[in-house]
Image (cartoon, rainbow, N blue to C red):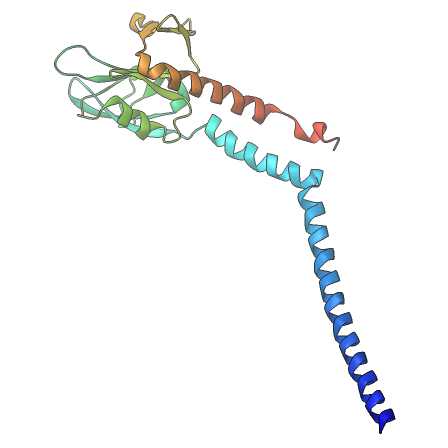
Length: 213
């Protein structure tokens, strides 16, 4: 009788042992898979893939798509296809009409068939400059509001004693060369200018050579 009980106990222990071994094997496989995932996530290849992904996203920020802007000339409606990077600044007239003017560094052609080109796009709508800027460049990488009546392309301007000085030399509009910036907008201008430079540095960095690929 005792021998039968002993045999049963031994069988039970073996079953338990086999069950534990199966659990251990499953856990070891899971651990090995996790190790492989961790090794991949920490590998230079994964880092390179991630940086390439970010670089591609930054490429779109640095080279935003063209947009259609509706303007007017002598109260005749016009349409222009422009890139945010070609905008020098957006200003508002001082008279009662409050016409918004987009100043370009490259002439744009009227999309309605008129062969005339222009570097000035006038907008008579009641839109504010911040709204116009957002419509043109949703990411707001280049365009920064500098007062209630002006926005500038941070790539073309430098901050100098409360004024923004245009770096371009071929612009013929004198009012674009020196624009007053309100104190409330100085921090935003600096932040956008620094962010643009950081994006450029990151985008230009050759990570494959850094990682010895």
